[in-house]
Image (tube, rainbow, N blue to C red; front, side, top):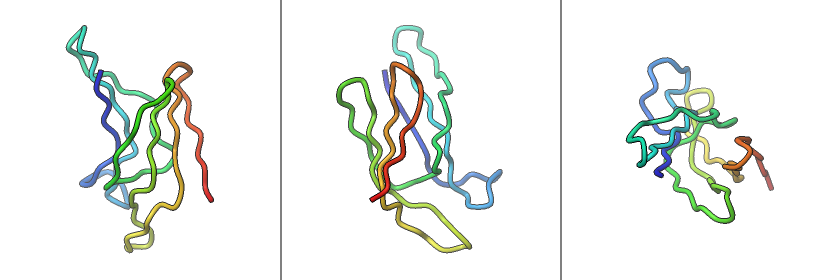
Length: 87
């Protein structure tokens, strides 16, 4: 399975940043839309461990300015929910 999340160019958002998360199921060869991230972001990567997807940092836009996300979002794959951690 492959996961994609966030990104730039969202014409339907004031910030232009996506909060969508999708999974490509290689067995069925289909994309599946998952729960939207609580914080839209772009310019980040993710790591997978223990059934969770960890999405650190990244960027978003606020009041027309680029803002660095100072925190981490965890997607719990088995229960389909997010935790947001901010320092």
